[in-house]
Length: 40
Image 1 (cartoon, one colour):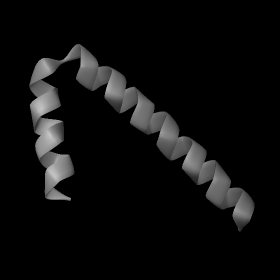
Image 2 (cartoon, helix red, strand yellow):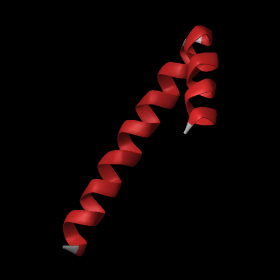
Image 3 (cartoon, helix red, strand yellow):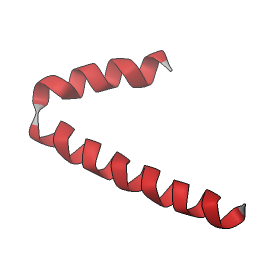
């Protein structure tokens, strides 16, 4: 159970890093993403 939790965390952090890189490259997405983060 703990192993799967760790692998999921690693996967999520990896996806999150990819998303941040996309956002940095695309100013339009940045404002959209900010709204999503505020909404959650």
